[in-house]
Length: 254
Image (cartoon, rainbow, N blue to C red; front, side, top):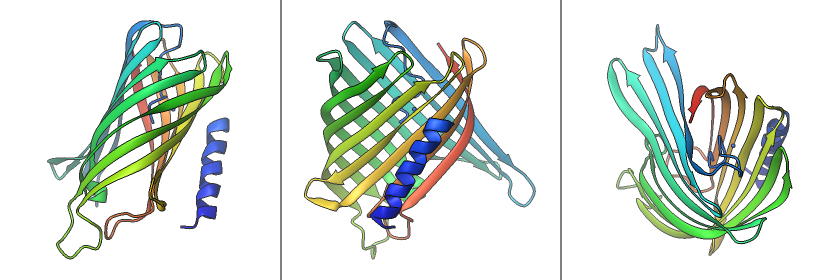
C-alpha cells in the first residue's frame, strides 16, 4: 500500500470521527473529576449453521486522578469459542502516567504488554516517555498532539525458513493525534491516530487508529460503535499489512 493511499485512509477515518476514543481516550474521566473512576465494555458475535463460532470482547479502563497527575490502566481481551473449544486470540494491558507541566502541556510515561495470535505475535512489550500538547481545548472537546520515544520488543511464532526475524528489538518514534468531541450530553465521539516509525529506518513504521461513537443510555450504561485500523509496513511472513475491525458494545461506567 502506498503512502498516498495511507493518507487517504487517515483522512477518511478523521471524517468518520467528525460525523459519526486507543482507546487511551475512550470513556476518559472529565478534567474536573478527581479520584477513582473507570468503565468496562462487553461486545460479542454469535455464528451458527455452517460456522459454529462465538466471539466475545472485554475491555476497560481504570483512572486514578489527582490535582495534576493522572494514572490509568487499559485492558483488552478477545475470546473465541469454536465447536466448544475456547481460545484467546488477543490481549493487551497498557499503563500510562501523565503529569501536568502547564495547563496545555503534559509529560507522560507508559508501558504495554500484549499478544495477537492472528498476526503471529506471541508477545510484545514496550516502554516509553514523551510529551503531549493540547493545542485545542474547549468546553465540549479537545485536540491533542503527542510525541514520545518508545522501545519495543516482539516475539513472533514463525517457521524456521521465515524471512521476518522471530525476535525484534527496535527504537521507535511514537506520534499521535487525539481528538474528542461531546456532541450533546448523551453522544460523544473521539479517537486517536498513531504513527510510529523506527528512528533509524523511517520506511519501517506502524499506523494505528481507533475511533468510537458512544451513546449514553443512563448515567452508568452506554452503547458504542468502535472502528480500529492497524497497518504494519513490515509484517511477519504471510500476514497482510492492514487489518480493520468494527464492533458494537455495551459499557458500564463507575
